[in-house]
Length: 267
Image 1 (cartoon, rainbow, N blue to C red):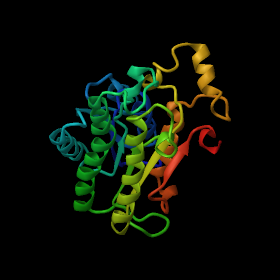
Image 2 (tube, rainbow, N blue to C red; image 1 turned 60 degrees about the vertical axis):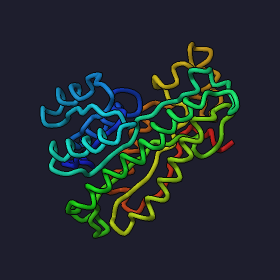
Image 3 (cartoon, rainbow, N blue to C red; image 1 turned 120 degrees about the vertical axis):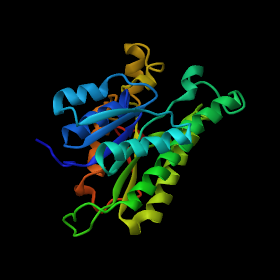
């Protein structure tokens, strides 16, 4: 059984569905105790506790557009596990899906841009802020194979469209470029504190977020064909990448935006 995260305390935002849910389950299967955070619960914490015991997971309601709720989330995580080792900032939206991904900057309501940035960028920044405060205040974990004592691991959800642009995403793509940028900046600022800060950059993954884009099998096949691998990603593909980034196997990895896109951005 994979126990790479044995005993570590992990917070996953956006845990009720999609990438967040898959990551919460994967981390719990790897030995972590998981705090599932989202606006509302869909029962992922119950799914985890039924498999790994009542102390393996909890749920905290959190809207990442509200700073006080993020601060409370970190406090609740510390109360649950005694410390905070990992945070995966996965809460996010794709505003343009409401407009069929067919708008340019001059067409989209400003409120859509503001909301997308508030969740996808500012929310990530705030989660990092309060997680970093806690990680700096606590004793580091035991030394890894490099003889280094790590204080924490942060994984931010960016996108392949945070690395390359995509037509008609005047809100989503800029918000994810911001995540890539802040990940690099924070990584160099906290490397001396031995806090790993990385990002995952998924391609089109089968999650509720892109359900409006792939409404039927024909549409799904068309989107899959955009990837050289000729398939859509799975949420578990991203969860496995996050697991690596939070494990001792990634002891010399920080500031990296890992692209997991079936080759899309190679083109």
